[in-house]
Amino acid sequence: MAKLRNVHSVEDIRAIAHKRLPRAVNDFIEGGAEDEVTISRNRSGFENIHIVPNILTDVSVRSITTTILGTKVSSPIVLSPVGLASLAHPMGEVAAAQAAGKMGIISTVSSSSSWNLEEIASSSSGTKWFQLYIWRDRELTAEIVERARAAGYTALVLTVDVPISARRERDLRNGFTIPPRPRVSQSGDLLKHFGWFYAQLKSELAGHKMSMGNFTPGNVGMRSRLKMLEVVNDLFDPSITWHDVEWLKSIWNGPLVIKGVMTASDAKRTVASGADAVWISNHGGRQLDGVSASVTVLPDIVRAVRGKAEIYIDGGVRRGGDIVKAIALGANACMIGRPYLYGLAANGKVGVENIIKILQVEMDATMALMGRPTLESLDASAVRILNEVGK
Ligand SMILES: Cc1cc2nc3c(=O)[nH]c(=O)nc-3n(C[C@H](O)[C@H](O)[C@H](O)COP(=O)(O)O)c2cc1C
Image 1 (tube, rainbow, N blue to C red):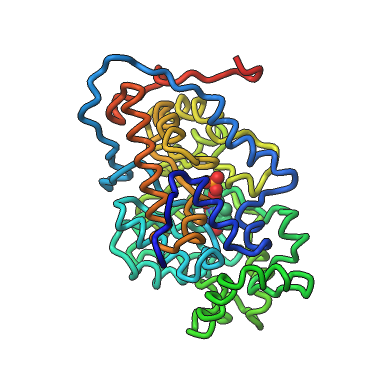
Image 2: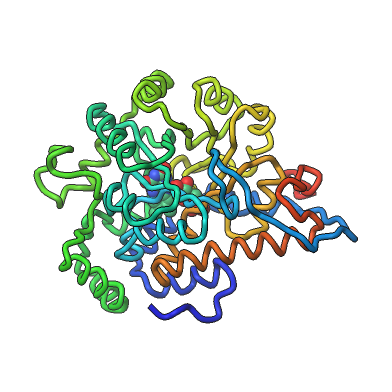
C-alpha cells in the first residue's frame, strides 16, 4: 500500500479509515453501548484537564522512553486488545503486532482476535500480552491460558467488564454478525467500498476466514461457523468474581493485569488479589454506558494504589498531549484502541506505525513546550483539572 500523504493527526487517519470502510464496520469500530455517553466523556475528560507550562526550562534533551512491567519501551503507549481487527484490514492483529514491535511498544492481543494467538505471536518479535476472558467453560479458559504461555505472551490481561456483552445499538440496527452476512439493503454501501470488499474477498479465498481465530468447532462445540458470534457471546460468564481471579493465579504464575477497573476500592482489591497492574478502562464506552471517563477516575485510583502496582489507562486517548496528562496524573502507560484500527483500515501495518509515530511526536512536542523534558519530570503540578462547572 502506498504511504499515506499529508496525515498529521489521529483524526486525519480516522477520516481516511471512514472513507474506506463500509458503514457497518465503521459502526462496529466507533460504536458504544446505548447512548454512547461514556464515549464522549472519555474525550471531554481529557479536554477538562489543562496543561500547566513551565517557562525557561532547558528542554534540549528529551526522552519518552520508559519501562512497563519490566520491558523497556520507546514510549508509554500500548496497543489495547481489540477483537476482529481483520475487519479493518485483512492482516488485522498480525499487522498491528508487527507495527508495535517495529515501533518498540507492547501490543495486547484480544481473546476475540481474528487471527489465532499462535499466528500473531510468531509474526513479530515485539513484546506481546494476551487478553483473557474467563469463559463459562473453565477448561477452555485454561487451555487458552496454556496456549498463550506456550506461544510466549509475557503477561495476561484479564478483562473484567464484560459479565455480559452490552447492547451496542448500531450493531443491532445493522444486524452485525460474524462472519458478516450483509443484508440486501447494505449492498449499495458495500459496492461503494469495493476496495475493502475486494481485499476481504481475496483474504477469504487465500484461506483466512473472517472469524475469531482462537475458537474452533472443536473447542467451543460450534456446529457452524455462521453461528460464531452467538456462540462466543454465550461464553461470557456473568458469575465470575474475585475467586475466579484466585483460580486464574493458580494456573498462571506470570504477570497479571486486571483491565476494566473504574473505582478506587476495586483498584485496592486488584492490588490485594496479587495482580501486577491496574488497567483503568470503561472498554472505550462499549460496555456500561453512563460511567465516568476513565481519566476522571485516575487520580483517585493513583491515591488508592499507593505505588503498589503499575497503573494503565485507556479510553479516548487521541493526542500525545492526552498521554502526557495521564502520565502527569500518575499513570505508567496509556493504551489505545480505536486509533490503531483507523491506522489499520487506512494503510495496514504502516498505518498503525503512523498512528504510533504521530502520538510519540505529539508527546515529545507537548513536553518540550511545557518545560517537562522527561516522563520523570511530569507530576500532578503539570496539569490542572477543571471541576464539573468547567472552572
Ligand atoms: C472494535 C473494538 C473491539 C474491542 N475488543 C476488545 C476485546 O476483545 N477485549 C477487550 O478487553 N477490550 C476490547 N476493546 C476495548 C479496548 O481494549 C479498549 O479498552 C478501548 O478501545 C479503549 O478506548 P479507545 O478506543 O477510545 O482508545 C475493544 C474496542 C474496540 C473499539
